[in-house]
Length: 254
Image (cartoon, rainbow, N blue to C red):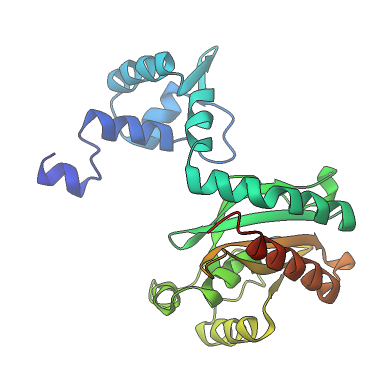
């Protein structure tokens, strides 16, 4: 790879172009046309068409009429990431139990860069949870799960979030003042759980706790998300803390 390739994230290589094509699909995209992929990637139409054919043969893409969508092979490869699979499998039974007790949406999340990445979700009817998806991402500072990861993570992570420019305002009530966020994180460390009210989605709030491995390493965060009118912070925090303790004591993940 040349220096130019490195500066462009490898986009001048075949692998780099294939990566751009796959990453052109955003969370809410069911499918994209060839023209849309070309516009999003900046790659020539002929090259996108050629690479799409190879990705179709590999199973990374599927074709429906004139549109493309991510294929089952992409899902299979993502599911093989060992640390995520082990974590998800270990926590999933507790998530199902929490959902059975509360009838609310339960999320398992990890940090990826300066964002929360949702690994698993257990929810009932669509109206029981705010719009969210497995593999969805949100800024760390705007979510209860993210605030837990910030509060119990390395101090350098907080500095990176604060030093990355103005904090993104996801909703009108998202905390974007650094001083206020720092005060919140101190409270999270003292209380052992984090909350957010309508900072991500209007009408919804969350309570989250950290998930530690048997060695005490911070692995993830677990949350209950409810309509604000059904919020019960004390009860939900107690239920979540109980799960966190059971996961750490189970020695299933480290």
